[in-house]
Length: 255
Image 1: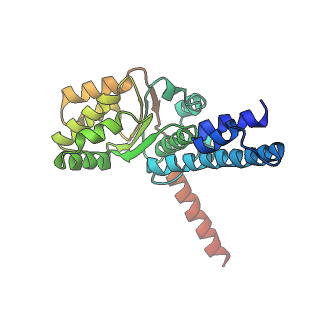
Image 2: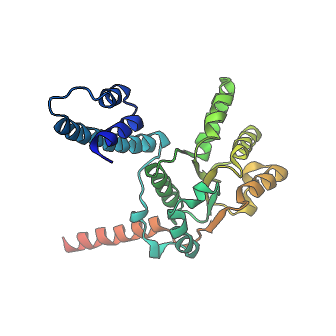
Image 3: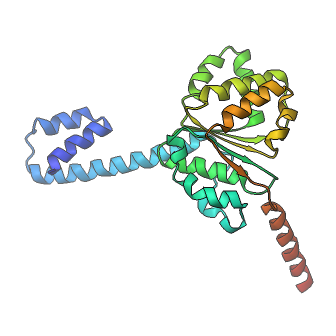
């Protein structure tokens, strides 16, 4: 493909009809070959910049509480199931297949880190991602219902390539909240991917939802063809705190 044709194709991709028409009509440049070379470099740079901006915009729109990367994980310290399944999850095939990822276990074992890091990877790969803690999502849903904008939110929510819901189980909620969460997760069941982190096992989810029938239905839909990771293990944060205390004590002793 020569420079002229390459410019035409890039103009189509970047939606620059005026430049494309100018090149297609072979506007009388004083030195067409040189003009095409310069224009091609300009367009390639614009294409590259747009890709970077698009990635940044997707990460910003996802509303992550902080940026976490998979490379920052201490893999050897992860629970066994996380070690085994992380390579497959990194591929993001679960998003293409509309599968869920459920991470349950004790606090401080890397559940939120893995969830956010996979969300970051998804944003970089071109997927649209939504992040929220479960309590904040329920508050959003209630606000949308009271403002009669719930349907508009539903249409957006069900179209995200990946929804990440963090901290299920830290705060219980009322019947309205449980029903809203159930209905919105049901919109995505079997079609779009959802990652959920919880400090409670499935057997204890009824303590949050206060409805055995609804709990059973939600658990069934979320776990169908999903990746369920048992994240029980020693706390990273507790280990870091202990190391910090030891280091501080050593510094005091040295002084």
